[in-house]
Image (cartoon, rainbow, N blue to C red; front, side, top):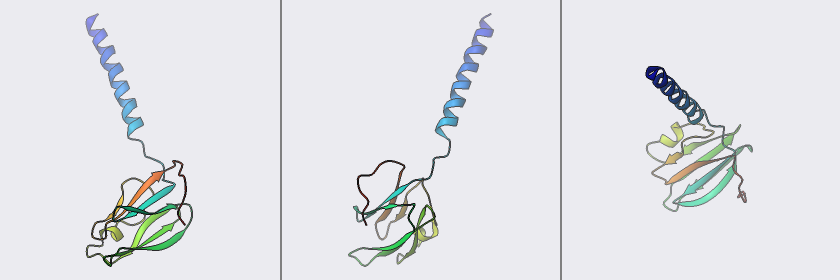
Length: 119
């Protein structure tokens, strides 16, 4: 009788762990907005549903061309030496896009509400 009880307890624990892992590891939906910061200051919050392209320049002479297309965002041109931010390609969520030499960060905001969108 004790063996059956332990088997039931372990089975229940396994089912709970499996359910939690499926819930926690499921793919996230695409973000709706992205916040672009340069030198630690928010430069622009963009709606990823609107195709656009703009340049973010730094006082030290760095520049990044940011392109939004089909719900995704990318740094398409940069004057940094490593070009890591450009090679990252178009993203729609998940990890941030970072250009360390130019101190540019693109952070995804998901589907949360925003107070205003900079134009």
